[in-house]
Structure formats: structure tokens, C-alpha cells
Image 1 (cartoon, rainbow, N blue to C red):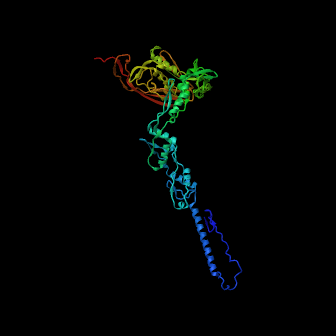
Image 2: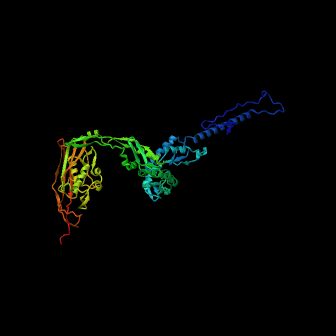
Image 3: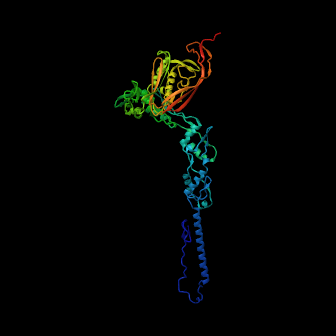
Length: 608
């Protein structure tokens, strides 16, 4: 559009109007009076009036255009259209940077509210979602960009108003994990696709849809409902496993069946071995991930476990350095390295050939495996002298099942090394102590009475080890004395054990390593601690026994499970461990225990 023949000026500059000079009509100059009958020319007064009208009109036009430019400047000022609010903050007419700063200030003011847990309804469960845990936040830059993207008219910019919703972000996968953990089982589970092996026969499981949580649907609901101030309801939607029934059939025909059709030969630089069909079936994994997708793989750990005898043909196990006693002196037995099949790489190679027909062959590499404890490691431990020793005694001789158990556990612990700062656990070192591990039935305390039980007698070794560690000044971590006191043990400072609930643990709190040495005879068990002497001495002082209680007589049904006893008094007593170093007492620890009176068990009926 043009005004008075001139184009509209741009909105960012004042309008300009050009004026043409007013000239008299062409012809000879006017002289004298007009010729009779000729038209009369304009009078001087009328010409001046017309010139004033022209100038007035031009001035008005200039004023109108100037006003229009000013209005345009006002309406289009800033990046964000006027009248725009976000979260109740008027950011209209601001630059993007100014709008972002204003929004951040408002978010900071609402920090406590926006950071508060959001109640989310999932089925019948309500889960409190911490915004920080799932990345729930207002994206300031994206919000300002959305606000600036509006294109209202000049009138709309001058007189209109609009509210722009903030752009909310949330990590959909993290939200899904939190919802699943908090809500537990909701909806209906999908039947996940799988192919498992019954022996060496593959068995398919076909997928079925369920109803549950969906990451994107949950995130969308939270984004939309977060700032409303009320609980957010997350929908349960139909969920389908990613792998279809048709894909299960294809995996059956193209992988599962061919996989167990024949063994696979493995070649190495140290010879060959065979992966039997049974080992393939045990290690081939065709189960679905949480999304219901089957990604075939060979489990390297399961493969190694299934190939124990085959791998022994080509592998050499590393040997840790250790310490033994020779002629009463500690001697370091050097370490040696080994080499093992890289079963992780072998698993990948095996998976690639399983769909192929027989004969099948893969190549495996051998990896060098260093010892966990090297000769240099042991040499630095400072194991050079005996720092404590303790002996307890028993009856029965080598033929006794109880003696057998004491010697069995002593053999397992003999030579154990505990590095500085490490905690030694007797249960952790030996593992289960049952028939399979070579232990026999002997008397144990169960429910307050002696009965036959596998591993009976191990408590005597436990007490002996506890005292050896005690007199070496090592830190007591866990121990529990017996319910009844037996004279073969020192009172208070003794310990029982029961796998896996009762354990003996101590920490090597010295700067040197320790070696546990065990020895035995037909009537005694001895445990010695070898290291570098760290304390001057460790001694014990006992209090007098108090609160002495006498046993009662209990009659038991005669039979092989009845073990008669004479009864033992109960009492309470204290013991103090006194540790000296550099000629001074540096520690005094108090141990207190109350023994129950052991009843006098009689195998038979009470007298009439």
C-alpha cells in the first residue's frame, strides 16, 4: 500500500515525504487588467489558501505515518510477543535472554514446590516420584523458543494476551524403572517369548500380550500433569513382546535346532577340544529381555562351567605365591602364571557357527592369566616369626568322628594368608562343612542339648583359632561363646560356630601380613600366627565368677540320639585383653559372657 504515491516506510524508520515545488501556469507573465471576455485568473488570496491546505494535508500525513511507525516499534519490540505469560510471569516484549532470566528466577522461587515428590497413580498403587530422580524439569530455553515462535498481528500484539505452557522434560526410561520398582506388579504380565532346552531338545514358548506400563505414555502423562498440582495418573496400556511368534519359529528352525545337531571342534595352539551338544544346550541363551526381545547369545560363564573337563586339556591354572614352614622357618613358595581359553571370545565364535551344518569348527585363543598373589607380594608381607600360638586338648583319638572333623577344618585353614586390613572369615574360607566336604556326625549343641550333627567338633578348632588371633592382638570382628562352658576352653574368650549363621571373623589390623599355621596330634589342636611382631605383649585378666547357677536334671528318651551329661554350672564372668606396645599399655578391652547351666541329661525315665 502507498500513501500519496509513496511506498510504506519500513517499520524501523520514520516516514519520509518529498514535496514538489508549486509553479505558476506556463505563458507570458501577467500584466495589467484582464482582457474582456477572458477567464479570470486566480487571485493571490485564493492561491495562498490552497498552498496552506496542501501543506496542512502533508503535515497530517507525516504525523499519521510517524505515529504508525511508533506503534509498530512498540508492538514488535523484543523477541517475545507482548502479552505472553509463562507460569504467571509476563515475558512479553522481552529478548530471549531476558525472558530466560525471568523464568529462571520464577523457577528458583518455586524450587521447593517443583522439587517436591509427585504422587503418581499406577493402577491401585501410588508412587512418590522425586523429580531429580527422573530428570523432571522445565526446559527454560525450549520454553522461551516456543513463546517467541508466536506470530500475532499488530493488533494482537498491542491488545491481545496468551499463556504459553512450559516445555517439561523427563527421562522416560528412568521414570519407567522408578515406577516399576515403586508400584511392583501392575496390570497383566506379558508371556515372554523364549526357547529353552529340555536336555538337548529345544522347546519354544510363544509370546502373548499383556497390560502394563509404557515408557513414553508414562512420560507424557507426567509432563502434562506435573504442574497442575494434583496427582498424576499414569495409564496402563497394551504391551506386546518385541519378538513375535513367527520370529520364535524362525529362531527354532534357523538356530536352536541346528545348534544342538552336532558338537563343535575347537582348535588352540596347545591342542584341540570338543564342545559337546549338552554344553551348547546349557550355554545357548534364547530368552527375552524386559521388552520381550530375544537376542541370541552364548553365556561365557555357563560355557566354561560346562567345559571343565575339556578345558583342562589345554589350560594351565595360575598358582599364587604362598608361605610354608620349613625346619621351623617360613619359606616363600613362588607364584606362577597360567593360561586360559578366552571363553568370552569363544562364545562369539561359537554363536556364529551354530546355525551351520556339521562338521563345525572354531578357533580359540589362550590368554595369559597372572596369579592373584605374586612372589613379590608375599615377600613384602613381612611374615618372618611366630607372634602367637594356642593349643586346646580333646579325647577320643584319631578314630573319633569329632577328632576327624577338627583335623579336617584345620587342614582347610592351614597356610591361609591374611593381608594387612583384610578380614578373615572362617565360614567364608571353608564354605559349607557337610558330608560332601568330608565331615562326619559328632555331638553338637542344638536347642540346649547335645545331639549328633555333621561337623561336630569344629567349634573346638574355632576356639583355638580365636585365641591365636586374640593373643596376636588382631581385631575381633565377630565371635560368639558357647551357651555352656566346657573346661577344655578358657572361659569368656572362646567361640562357637555354625554354618552359615554363626561365624568367626577377625581383622588383620597390623601393617604386616599374617600366616595361619595349624598342627595337630591325636589329642590336641594348635593354631599359630606368623608375622612380624607388632605388640610387646597381649595378656588376659579375668574377674571372679559371679551369679553362679546350678544345673537341673532332665530325663530324655533313650536311643541313639540321646547323649548323657553330668551337668555344668552356669555363671557370668569378665575378661580383659591388655595390649602393650613400646613399653606402654595401649589398649584394654573388656569381654563379658554369661553361661547357662548345662542340664544333667539322663537317658531314661525318672525314678518312680
